[in-house]
Amino acid sequence: MSLPASPNVMSEQVMTRAFIALERLTDPRAEHLSSESQAALRQFSTDRLIGYGVDRADALRLREMVLAGAEWRAAAANLADTCRLLADEAASHGSELTSMVYLRRASALLRMSQVMMLEDTPDRCELYREAGRLYGAAAQLSGDRSRVTLSTPTGPMVGWHLTTTSSPIGAALVIGGVEGWAMDFDCIGEALAARGVETLMLDGPGQGETRFEYGNYLTEDWRHAYTVALDFLESRVPEHPIGIVGNSMGGAIAMAVAVGDPRVRACCSNGGMPAPGLVPPSVGTFFTKMVACCGDVSPERSQAIWSTVSPLAPGSNTGYPLLVLHGGADPMVTAELAQVLFEKAPTCDKQMVVFSDGDHCLYNHKADRDAHIADWIRGRFTASLPTAGAYGEHDEDH
Image (tube, rainbow, N blue to C red):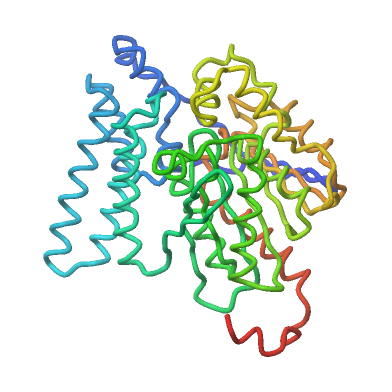
């Protein structure tokens, strides 16, 4: 774990959290592996796997199995099978909480087993469908979240709704990006719910279960889907503020949604980009995955669709509160791009926090990141809410 190297540096709008960057060693065994295995090991570090919900022991084991010659998909699936067996064994002994833990571990591993697949084949869809079933089985045991299906103009959309244990002070939408989706970022939802913020972890068009289960892809009409999601949250906590958290490319989507909907009173972009439509084909696999979010379309068509995601354009909610998080060691979003996103965002009510050694989406600072996001949103909500009792009897309904 990184330790502070020097006191945090802060201006009125930009704060840097300084950490000692750890040396990142490469294993010489990777040189003799297939190109896919090398790419998987390069793209999915232990920190990133843990950031997507994989247990640390499973993450270390997965990478070690691949380094020893196993293929990524098979290794992740085998580990998931082990967790499923352990979940069944725990359930047979009446240990429901232990079974829940193993079910979530199995789900995360299955989600990781499909990350290197670039086409939406039946096998890939079934892997993700099973991951959702396992996550749902764990949710039944935990009792703190439930699967919801929302109707949108382009088809059904899936989310996971986290409730609070006390009267909610607001609600928030959490979305992922091109390859990290709703179940992968449930840690942010949990941090928000613990602070009184009901949360919908959403697979938007082109993401996760919405894509693999219902074939609902990203189109130029994507805004309507997010309006439906905000409608759902508004129905859950009427007259309370709503926030949105977007991770990776989802950060750009979150900002584009926030600036166009006055109901959004707090927006966080974690690892977002200022102009998704300008990502060129030369970036390789990532661009291919961006195209896949749009379905069976040409690269040119995909770029046109992504160009409609415009986080820097003005809208009816210009001036919304914005938090931008950036990792100083982000290999995807440069400091210059993050600065453009921050400076040109159509609001003066904004702050950027830079983690000096942070990976993309701050996977290597998961706990600090989640706490910072949830505390910031809670602070925004409590500052904007009327005094206690101002909503009269309505408060008691929650």
